[in-house]
Image: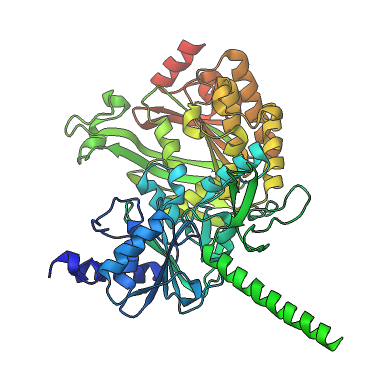
Length: 302
Length: 276
């Protein structure tokens, strides 16, 4: 059987190697485990790390959701989903987060809380948070081994000196299980607290850099911070002190994307997580229906 | 007196070494390169004790092995043989028996090092304050305002204007860079400080100010120091006791006054005579 029509595209040896790497990554939370990273029929840097994890962990009858920046319809998500559909016959795909067994994602963790029986795979461009302060991989390995992240903290210090706050918007260095600091992939700060004690297993795969690491279920994940300058997530309050809401569903608790309306030239805000947004709209209209029914009932009673 | 450091028979050979290395090198052979195997005997059988609050001078010409001694003790390079024990608040550390991680921990928390070249001691990509913060962060001080306060304090102490603490060290003059380096070395209040040719290459008035600063620190905090220099003036001003090294061997040691007034070894006599 040629590789192209093998279930999951990868041959069994490749999948076995990745599964073994995953076991090691889960056993040493946050440690970047090197793996071979096979050639995929797309450029490295297009999510091949996440894709290889998905292909080696998916089985027939399971359901997959692919997310790109919160959306199921952006180009990366569409292409990866159709590739997986072609190479994994018998696998179902969905856009509903709560229906998915495996979720492969780029730049976002779903808004809804994941469950123990779910698995989230994040695509990682740069796995090593220390790369900005130390060019030599040998030295970085020693720093990781000794959990010496003082130079990363100096970066945060310099940020506060210059800008009065920590300016890292995504890829926020996060300490896993009190030892290794990981680059949690380009998720916004909003999503970092979701890694902490997550019931779902979180796997991170970097195809170009050939590294896999994990945040196992119910494991500590703490963003680096100072005692007196705590970590904080994005603030969506407007000039009047009001929490901005999604222009589509009206939700005021989700992570919002900012757009410029091409007609009015005004800034508009919308849920970044497409599934969350549509589910929220459905739930709101149900509430409205109940409200109208009870209103009608009152009218009848009155 | 409390002993801080006890160094015994420290040696460092660059090269493979051979059985006759030590016999064929040294001041009496006028070389530190073994004629048999070509190895460089940078330092051989250096032993000394250092007590709390004491400044020990190591003097000698370039290539005499004086910097090698402090670099070994600061774990910049491993010695070929010998041992050293560091006594710290009732604890005893056998320096060369510890693993690399323990050595780095100890060096960052309990030792301070000031190099001749500030590029070795400072990170030029981060601000002066950031350099000090790095050492504090290594010692698990994780409070931003505490770090700021301590860095301001140290820079004021070493006479660097605290308004300039958020500037990059490359904007500073050589003397200022050296002061920042001293402030960084002092960040964790180390009981032991290594100073490797700290005033070499600075103009005379700056030299005098930095030497004053070093003496003040010694008197205020009781820091034990090892001062490596080829400058007799520095030795005379700072060191209570002095080792004189040549071709990797200690040829004379004793009280600084004695060595400078009544040198015994021919080399020391020549050195003192030429300088005075």
